[in-house]
Length: 73
Image (tube, rainbow, N blue to C red; front, top):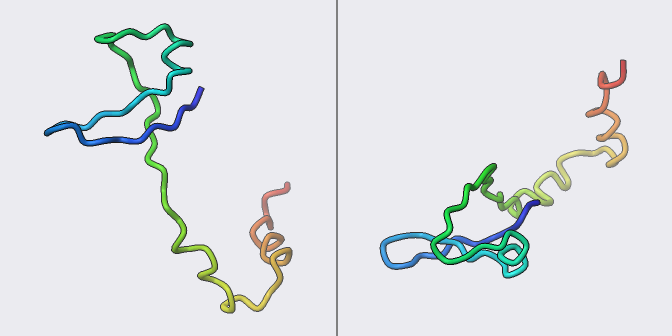
C-alpha cells in the first residue's frame, strides 16, 4: 500500500507524520520500529509542461505513433 507523506524538520532532525488510517491498520504505537521500503521522491515536472508547444509541428497522435514505432513485434 502506497502512502504519501511529507518530510518535516523537527529540531536538527527530519521526520514524517503517518496518516491515522495507516496507524490503525498496522496497529502502530509510539516507539514502534517500522521498515520503509521503496522510498521515492516525487518529481516536480511543472516546468516541462508545455515546453514543446510550438516546437513540434505534428499532432499529439502522430507523436505517440512515432514513439510507439518498434514496440510491436
